[in-house]
Structures are given as C-alpha cells and as structure tokens.
Amino acid sequence: MWAVTGWVIATWLRTTLALAAAVTVAWLALGTQSGAFWLSCVAATAAELFLSRQLLREWNDEAGLRWWWTR
Image (cartoon, rainbow, N blue to C red; front, side, top):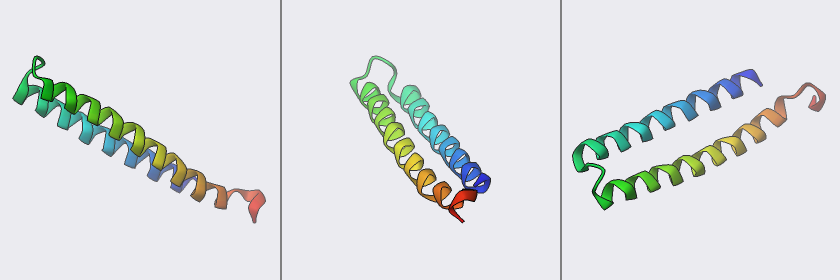
C-alpha cells in the first residue's frame, strides 16, 4: 500500500509543479492584466481538481486491494 501511496503523491506533486510552471509562463508572457492569463489560471485550477480527483480514485482502487484484511 505504501508503494501506491508514494506513487500517487509523486504523481500529484509532478502534476502540480507542471501546472504551476505553466501558469508562471503565462504570467510572464501575458501579464496579470490579460484575460488569457486569468483563463489559464482557471484552466489550471480545473485541471488540478480533476487530476487530483482521478488520482484519489486510483489510490482508492489500488490501495483497497492491498490492505491486510482483504487477503
């Protein structure tokens, strides 16, 4: 179970850092006054929520199979 948990945390961290880098690039390229920058912020937030939810589902499915009482 700890292997699955470590994988989920590492994947979540990589995804979050990639989205933060994308927003930073948009900020540097467009500035905060641009509507496209705010649209990219909303898109990154939506992607973070969606991907986090999917990772939690994956963890629940995989970790649920590895608990000691299911053997």
